[in-house]
Amino acid sequence: MATLSPILPTTSTLTWQNRLDHLLARWGWRRGEHRVAPGLYALGNPTPDSGVFVTANYTLSFDALRAALRGHDTYILVLDTLGINVWCAAGKGTFGTAELVRRVAATHLAEVVRHRTLVLPQLGAPGIVAHEVKKRSGFRVEYGPVRAADLPAYLQTRQATPEMRRVRFNLADRAVLIPVELVGVLLPLLVAAVILRFLSGWFGVWAAVAAVLAGVVLFPLLLPWIPTREFSTKGFLLGGAVAAPFALAMLLGAPGGIGYHEIGGAFAYLLAMPPVTAYLALNFTGATPFTSRTGVKREIYRYIRPMAGMFGAGVLLTLAAAVMRWVGGG
Figure 1 (tube, rainbow, N blue to C red):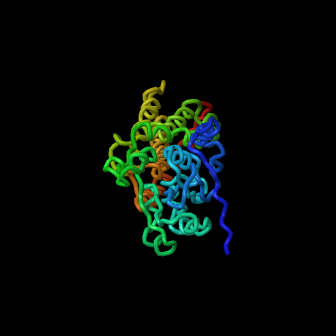
Figure 2 (cartoon, rainbow, N blue to C red; figure 1 turned 90 degrees about the horizontal axis):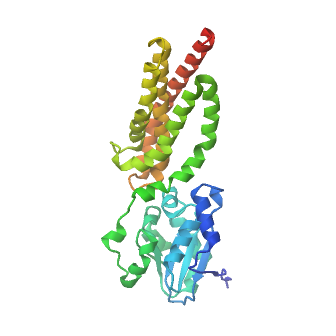
Figure 3 (cartoon, rainbow, N blue to C red; figure 1 turned 90 degrees about the vertical axis):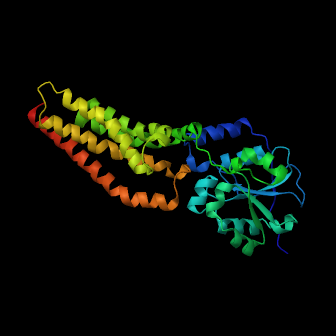
């Protein structure tokens, strides 16, 4: 007879260590380490008739679920999503049919509960083929609301209202994504700043900072209001708007009038800055309700080469301007 896997205890109380973990996760500190062990958890004192809720092993996902289930005696089945949240893991396939079936078998869930229903978060649906789960595990998939906070109301009727099904992505939802993206670009930005300090002075450094901040700060904040539907073209438009003042300053600030050096410098900013912003904008495709996996792939194939070409041309113009300045002694 197979030995049952241990059922791990948990509570609905979030400690200060949990909240510190959430803060560090938001800032990208040891990004892959904010995870809990996969397996079956008992919240309160569940019985064989208690519900089973499925989530990812990302600490923010797990903690949001257990906190929302305060006062309920239930089981939480945690899938191994490599420390990735439900939505992103569903897109990557780690919150998927195979892992769900494997975890049901590994925890001997059929011997723990009498019913055959699994409650999954709605945002996990892209990775799950419900009829395959039923066929391979014997458990039926039921989708709960988008937000864990709506679970108490949902459990009263087991019916999700249209509002519970609606995916929101308001200003606060977008702003919370900024810190981790900002941390991720600090080192490349520092390297670029050092190089640009020698090539084009502090003006070039500030241009690089502006292009990066446009991609990781302004873009998520202004996302709904930037024209076009594609993230890449949105990024190009925003990057172009940020680059324009630098190009104009290059042209209008020349003490001896506009020459080849000033024109080349202006084009360098207009060519190099927009693709940087557009490339960084693509990082938000996996964290918004505005895109699909096929749409993201299509964007990447369509725009990565133009991004690389424009950026390369801008770099070459910057190098050429630096060489002309050194040769001319300017």
